[in-house]
Image 1 (tube, rainbow, N blue to C red):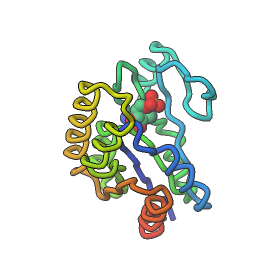
Image 2 (cartoon, helix red, strand yellow; image 1 turned 180 degrees about the vertical axis):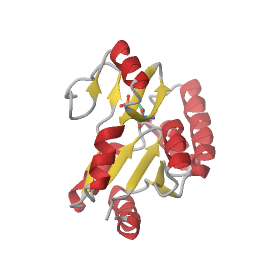
Image 3 (cartoon, rainbow, N blue to C red; image 1 turned 90 degrees about the vertical axis):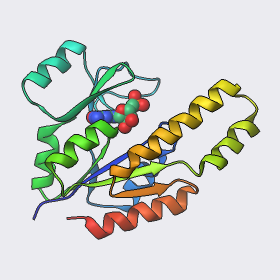
Length: 185
Ligand code: 5GP
């Protein structure tokens, strides 16, 4: 029996990282795939745990060697899912979780339609607007930009199997956990 591939996407700042951390605590046969990236590590990020931090040349070589299940460019950097690790884990019967952006999710879904895709959405646009304005630290321009990004993302989310609104961490984790239990291998 093989495992199931799960994909989680969502805008930055939506709390994906926390949701995934909580989900991993609740599951015993789900592993998070570690991607390669050309991005520089942020403070506290560890090579091999958060990402495999590689040079542009190394990344290009890995593309040529077809080592990626998918890869995409995001914010000027490249990110890719390591094919061998994912395939081996699935064959061992483990369920695998990818935390990747929309272009990568699309590539995988086309090739592996059995993969389950989940998009994490922020609470409603109105709620976000209220929060941003309430904070009082954002410029009007920044608020408008953020709201526009949310509209774009909610369009992108239409290609996903599930949409989960992160209005409350505990509730959202439960919802994702239910999806996981329903589809896990
Ligand atoms: P960050 O630089 O904030 O860690 O990640 C930026 C974006 O890249 C996030 O949306 C994240 O989900 C996405 N990402 C991380 N790893 C991969 C990957 O292997 N492939 C793709 N397509 N996107 C990734």
